[in-house]
Length: 127
Image 1 (cartoon, one colour):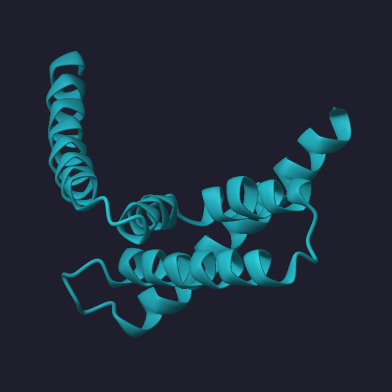
Image 2 (image 1 turned 135 degrees about the vertical axis):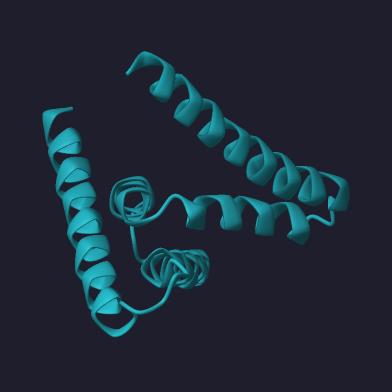
């Protein structure tokens, strides 16, 4: 069990460092923009990597299931959770569950933004 936790932690550290590096690189080239270019780039890159890994793992079966957990939960989880949201929504779309696709997009975005505002409000009241 210790080895699994160690590998998961290392994969998470790798994802964190990759996010930090990519964000920093994008910030250098987009410092005049009000749009969060670095976050958007990381999220798009994470979605691309999630799709790439998913297809690779499905079709090649080269990577053991345990290693997939380290890659998706560890590396990708630290790199961006947005990719998990998009991947899960994609799975719903692949199964033609369009109601859940719409609900997932709406709920995650609206409630996520609402939770952000609630956290800001709570934090301001506590300070």
